[in-house]
Image 1: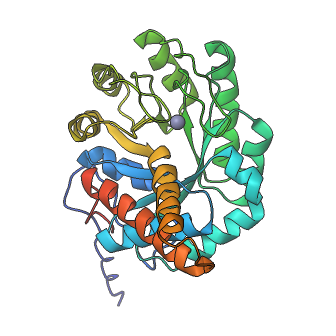
Image 2: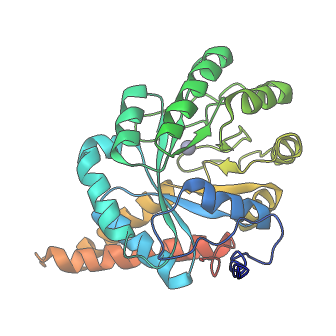
Length: 310
Ligand SMILES: [Zn+2]
């Protein structure tokens, strides 16, 4: 007699329709897409902090664990070059693997294909190929290549056709990038198959000297045509209502770079001014870590990702 086979266990799913299933087993370092697709479906934002060293890396992971949020750690090309890809990646793996929240490693604005290849080969989970200084046709052609290259490593790609105003870690320009017609952006997304996109919406890198004039409708228009997560650059200094509005429209990845640098260096200055004769680096590190961790917790909570770790 042939016994009927036992039915397999039902798949482990979240209650929200359209949200990917929870992976089984221990939490590995996860892909950018796993983090962003959930955030996009539920319309919360996940902060992507530009870390600059081991201390800031450890502090943002600790913050994400504290508020139970998924986390995107990102590195500028400058940081990759200053620490070196293998050491930086080793630091990331050794701190992220024991973390109890989903964490992923992303390369921010990278116009340099060689650095991009190095990071993908080393193990970064995703990259932003920044071809915004190129004509859109050439940017599209190269982004198609980058997507194919990333896929071979199981990695994901953020695309960009409009330069975000402001130089950040030696990349970019102080000129406002040209804003392309919606159709051109849609064609770029459809041709390249990028996993997320950084649209020009009037934000800028660095510290705002005047109130930025934002174009949130562009996020809505893009998401309506191509429903993929959008990325908010130049977030430092935006009002809380601007953040929550842009996230509700589809900005699932919110980059935070300047706020981390300002927090880090302000805490350093405060410590040195308060303790001019104290030659004790670990005490300084403790204050820096506490300040960066608090800044990160505040942003994760504001963007709605607190409590969303799986
Ligand atoms: Zn940026």
